[in-house]
Image (cartoon, rainbow, N blue to C red; front, side, top):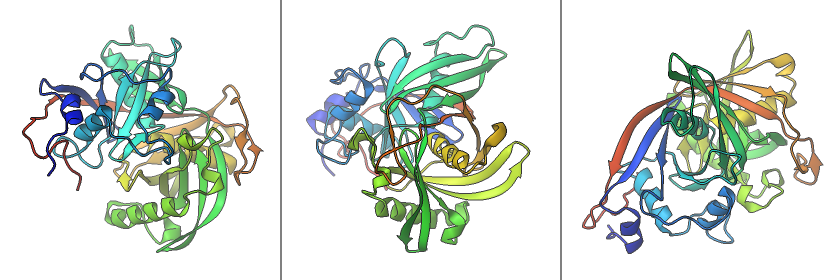
Length: 371
């Protein structure tokens, strides 16, 4: 194994890296202040610019460059301190004083543009830690700048405790319907929607699969194949350029009997390079809401009950909101289409621990490994 590099040693000094960990509906989120960890501030005036500084120029918008920040990401996400399903974020300054904080989201393969479950965890953390005051039992909104824009987490309080979080995403919109995709399971049709990141939705039944733990290996294989097959498709291109383009996650879903409030679905979201979301996926739920609204299934204030493969639940709805600035791409990616929908997703987030990680300069495993 390689020895610890100078960048890794600077990024992970033996005085310790402190983190606060949460889970949102079962999906982990590790919260870190990189400046407190000894790293210099990243260049850029916005969260999006700081993320761009962490990526290889001319790449696909996700490939990380070898920096001390990326070394710290790898230390915290890889074994033996993390695992392939770990997720987290670096707390950074917001774009302006209209938000309480900014965040750079990370996972095992790099830096993402959006993370609904992470936004919910950050909202709970901001209130639980006292960063944002929450007097009494009133709801309080935490505004957060993420690479795809400004989002909000409304933290619900009762009895002096956080009881839930509602995530309001950047506007979501459908960008492609019934796009044919060839897989080892046959040719299927994918619906694509942007909700801070691009998601492709495919019925698991069309793949001959069920959304359950028994079929996880096949679901992951299908998700990776679908993501690869859609690379470069016009419906995956964001008008602002490559940093927000490309399929981030594949949502493999199955229909369940409707509840009195509306549609009921179970999904597994396969994102990055074969990573499984343990929650129903916050941003992915926004994408599903855009598709269901397009189908007329959310009319009259109906809500989506969205289950994960682990059995946890988010509820989602579309809400009135300000129109999106600028034209969205048409469903074939060729021109303007409808403005995006404002969506809200509600779930729970709980603190799981506080940690102090170290890296011994003599540790030949360096920042770790992934299996």
